[in-house]
Length: 292
Image (cartoon, rainbow, N blue to C red):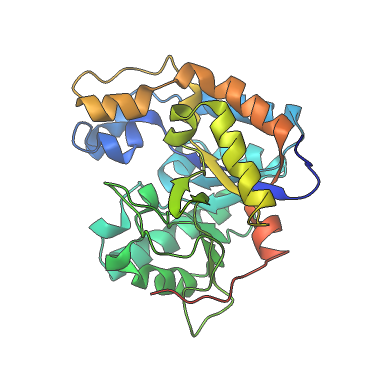
């Protein structure tokens, strides 16, 4: 049996709707977002009710586009005691921006979220974990914009993102600003291989016992808190289906959506969870590594 009191892990939600995922960029233009049926309110209400049932507080990395259109939703999650964090304004990957555009985006989104939510926004997560070796300047831009942490690097090999040799746990990416930290998405190291263990599509792809084993290994073998993420649309098997997707995109997006809620419920029973800021800022254990 897992000792739930040994480690508290971070539960996070990337607040974006089904049509805003990066994998749909070739099929759904941002100019068309306004005309598509939004599912975010319904799905977020389900998430907030689920978290309340299990007495869990989480971090919500929220698009400015969503917050602007659904301010009451943002105010509700703040009132429930969850952490409000930034996911940028309209889910543009960092690799598709220059430093000036990126700074303007994250600064604008931080101000927008703070105005709507009435709380300080300290954290940021890049669309599709898109801080990679080509745009490590993003950390300095985030620090300059007033953020305290980023959770934007996945230290794995992947066809769309990743820095495979990045530190697996919390580190300081800016030499001149050690107070700013990067909190990578959780992986487990098994016989020299890094295996994704932070949720998302992998949580739907793996059998539940494997995700449970991987998080347990991070807690007990690495002696570290794990970081888990998922999206509101992953609770929604009834979302409008896109018909023009290639096979890989269709498989990744729609696989096992009907299993997500039951797996989350088991995850909430098996482990202890809390907000990012409480785990990694208030009680930070930083590796001391600097990675460029």
